[in-house]
Length: 221
Image (cartoon, rainbow, N blue to C red; front, side, top):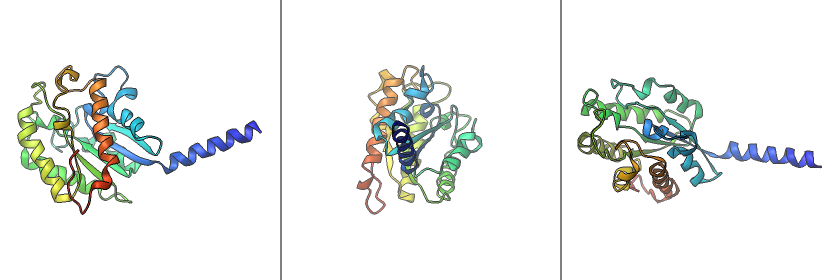
C-alpha cells in the first residue's frame, strides 16, 4: 500500500511539473546572482520561483558579463544560455539586459535598439509564442568597470520604453523600484541577497498582475 501511495505521489509530482508555467529569466550577472555565496539559492530567479509558487517553474538563464549588443564584450547571442532559452521553451520570458552595454567600448544607441528588436523578434519565433516582459535595468549607483548610470538612464531606458510600446509588451520598472536599495548593492552594480529578493518581488508582482494588461497597453510595475 505504501509503495502504491509513493508511486501515486511521484506521478502527481511529475504531472504538476509538466503543467507548470515555465519562466525564463534572461540577463547578465545581476540575474545570475554574482557576488552571492549561494547564487543557486538566492539569485532573483530562484526567489521568484518561490514567490510564484508551484504553478510556475523558473529557470535562471543569466550570464555574467553578457551584453544585448551583438558586438559587445560578450553577446548574449553567443552564450549557451541563449540556446537554452529555446531548449527550455518557456511560456514567459523576462529580459533584463543592458547594464553591460553601457560600457564605453560597447555602447551604440542605434545598434542597441536594433539588436534589442532582433532579440524580441527571435524569441517570438518560438511556438507557442511566449509572453515577453522587458525590464528597465536596476540603477547603477556608481560607475564601475565602465558601467555607468548616465548611459543607462539616457540611452538604455528610453530604448526599453520605446520598444515596449512598439511591440505592445509590458515593462517591469526595476530602475525606479530599486532606486532606494543602494545599501543592498555592495559594489554599486550587483544586488546582494536582500536586493535580489526585492527584485524578485517586483517581477512577481508583474507576472501576477499580467491580467491587467489590456489591449496591448504597457503596464509598469
